[in-house]
Length: 117
Image 1 (cartoon, rainbow, N blue to C red):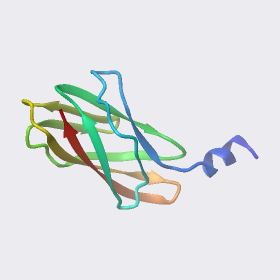
Image 2 (tube, one colour; image 1 turned 90 degrees about the vertical axis):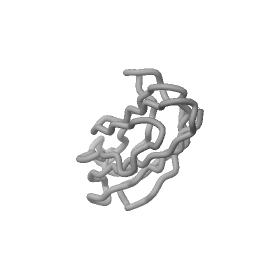
Image 3 (tube, helix red, strand yellow; image 1 turned 45 degrees about the horizontal axis):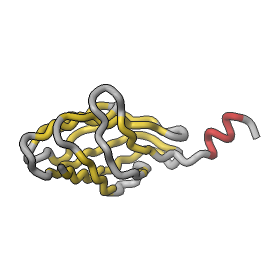
Image 4 (cartoon, rainbow, N blue to C red; image 1 turned 90 degrees about the horizontal axis):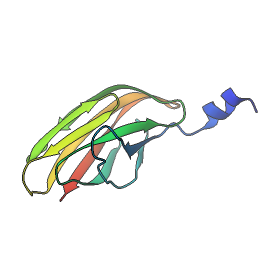
């Protein structure tokens, strides 16, 4: 099997992993695949941190936006991840909509993030 065939055969799912640009956000592991799915994510933060997207397979990201903003902080989405900055010692929630193209074609997924202190 050629390298290209192995790549195309790989699952085109995305995994959220902590990035190193700011302090890492410890979080639950999860996967999504542009199928209109809502994916729950638990995030631990007591300040400002960043999460970076890590693509697997043949996926590409064409859009990432905050679908529902946090109540006790700010979140900024980009094609490479999300930066969250909490205010105070409150738990929080927000949603991020990520769209792109995977092995099964184009679509979007929504990450429903719960932030705990």
